[in-house]
Length: 469
Image (cartoon, rainbow, N blue to C red):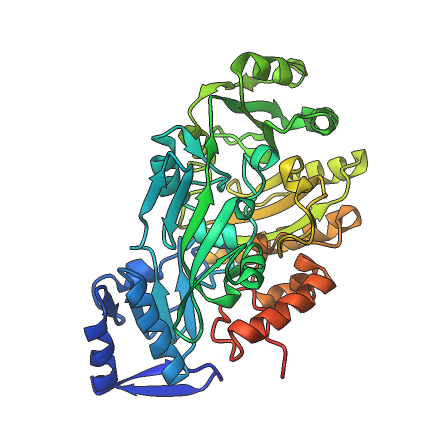
């Protein structure tokens, strides 16, 4: 091939000659692959099967030097660039159409210092990778709810997880980031170095560079008392009301989520997931009121290793389905909101779809609101309307159900939204991104973006456009 035609940052075409491509390849320990070459389709395939973008070239990075080379190449030629970590985000921004993709999935090592109680994870690690290494020492920190989720994407957007009540969000546990900036320079961001960048990376997403490693503080994790309580849909209203009241007095050691889902036998059910990180006898006492309510049609709660806790949703959320989500933080969950949710579950067109109420509070709410870019720390619940189905022919029905459910629940929503659950800007609208941070923080992020990425090279994300000089 004499050249590769890319999509440029301005949306036009950019032709890059073969000599420049070959020069890039000589800089890499990893590989640079084109459509049809081995590894290309593997790299561009994401969790959400609705995303079918095809980069003109993918750099499968083996280390930091490859990331630097890829960023400098994209900048020099004015190319649209995207960054793939775990590939789990529903918006699918990890894979650009016609641009240059930097694939970090091969950079997935996790190194633990058990004496210092720290772990350093590369930018392509998943929470399964992270938990395997940290739990070997009985340690861990807040991670995602599905083990294949990337450490990077979840953390950069805040990072809600089972341990947020006791140890804060994933981003609250970060000690330092190593970042390749838009200029192709490697910098460290911590409370002592580049403190403004450290602030912005804790919730501001991938707007400021490619984070090639995360250093986390670790905590003693386990033993756990965890599992699910299942109830028929006919009992969902009164059970959810009881669960809401139960959560109001929950200790920090308890993580909880309510899901209106489909059981393995096809029946619509309410699933209450309870995860207690502490003394098992105390956990039995804490969970007893909820376990005794009803009683449930099934109770799977028992002692459980943290790595197993982290896979509770894996089977029910496999990759390869078509996904469309909407989300809102909820200021309250009154009885009429519960009634609306149960009615929307009855109207759900796909058995793979879910309505989740994530329970928030504890340590994440005690972090100062101005300490991180992540905002809305004091809301008690997060609603995720998760549409998932097979086959493009069912798109209209399922997307319609998600949107209708979102509108029905707006009277109970707060002004904010969890940035990790946002879809494409064309669907969400710019105001939703602003709502993720509140206006004051958004304005601060715009200024920070102008400092670290004035040309908006990193725009394949929930994009914060730089302030104009």
